[in-house]
Length: 159
Image (cartoon, helix red, strand yellow):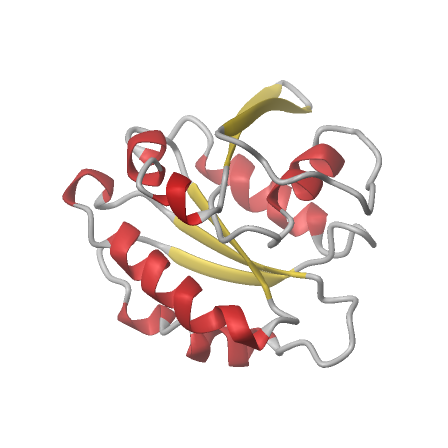
């Protein structure tokens, strides 16, 4: 899981792994790893820090994974241009070619959020080639659409 700081990566991973949502998460320094168990499948999920100093590490952590999850705060229009640049830079890495991409617009419970279609346009997802690209609106806080996220991840686990 990668994305800019304050997108909700740590909160999402905490909720997916069976924990509680907390409003006062501290920024991830480096990375977190949690296992998410669903049935007979265990997903090993990495949550990589989103501050500028950690973004250069994203490509290394994404090599050889079953899927890349990019999380963006869909209620904060100020971050969208930077999120688009970072996402496209990451997807241009030859070492990541062909790895499926799931873009999650988090904080869908907030007013003034983008729609999923607006997020797709803002992030120019149609310009990302050589991989499957999906995009969902979610709320880690309200646990909105997390079943769809897990279903998507399970589809790509161990392919």
